[in-house]
Length: 274
Image: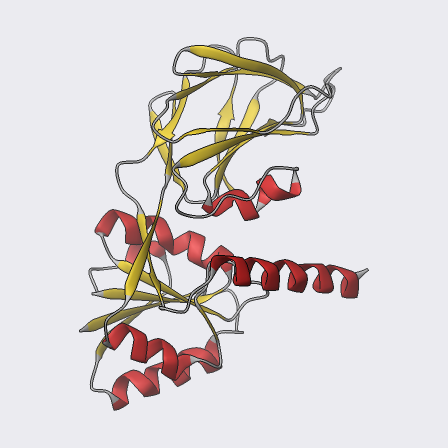
């Protein structure tokens, strides 16, 4: 077996964990490669990602497109997407060397004026500040399978996968979905109407985002990365990609245990900062 090890070059937290992991791989006689950018990822049998959720998001799309199973080891702050903590390296390597299960996570595909973008967590269409503009809120509409869902006036909308339901969408008031649910979430951001509420819809549906009413351009972000600014006349469609991301899971993995633990940890960290 050949393992790929993906690290975030811009943080040093992973260094002791990386060095410990390399020693364990060497002791087991396993071949490995270390990557620092998504473009470097080749075709290992498994990809071990060291970091938090942000690092996993950077590597996940390339792993999914290549059909590589991914295992996250937390060396960041929270790690909703990681399977092990940094002190569990031996257990992590033992898992990938044996019989492991995988959990497939759906991916969003966004087509915007001919360009294609992917997101494991969410695609965000949000207001773009322009100096001198009279009004920086945005008005946009969403249609699903050709039927108008609603018009949204406010800061924008989030289209989230079940994986992303514990990220930005959750902070904006969206529901938590278990990873096996085949659905997406449409969540308004600071809507100016109390009737605008999050909507869960099948991930087999096609969504069109209508920007014909926007005065200024709207920014598109996929997994936190700026993809471009779009306005009247832009054609934007959102659907499920034709590939998924395969996360390696241990037999005792329990989504609800992790959710409770991570949410409590998240709350404690926020209280410590305040």
